[in-house]
Length: 119
Image 1 (cartoon, rainbow, N blue to C red):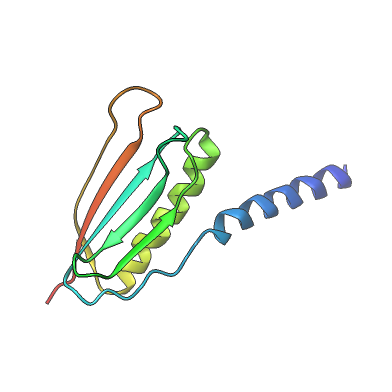
Image 2 (cartoon, helix red, strand yellow):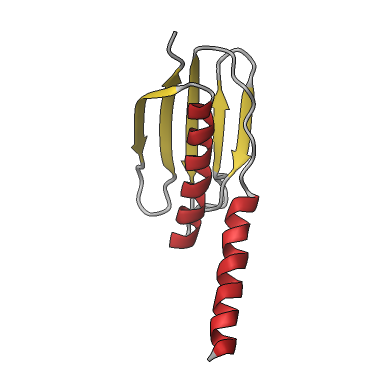
């Protein structure tokens, strides 16, 4: 019994570590508006990633997992939430968000988030 619990704990720890090893520090954005776009795809021809820009040259791109399973959706959610938290730590507020998918199960899920830094 101890062996089963130990193995389960080890697998949980390793899988949790894999999620957090993807987390990257985003750059400091100096402009007052930032757009975050996410693309989560189960199609190998459409890369899953997030992209942030302030429209003036400061950009950040980060790969996400392909959303073929519930596990990858959870991992992607952790990464996206971390990026949103980093933007909020920089003083940005979320002013708009939307998401959509079209074309069935293999279509990518696209999310758009617009942040503004109050004056």
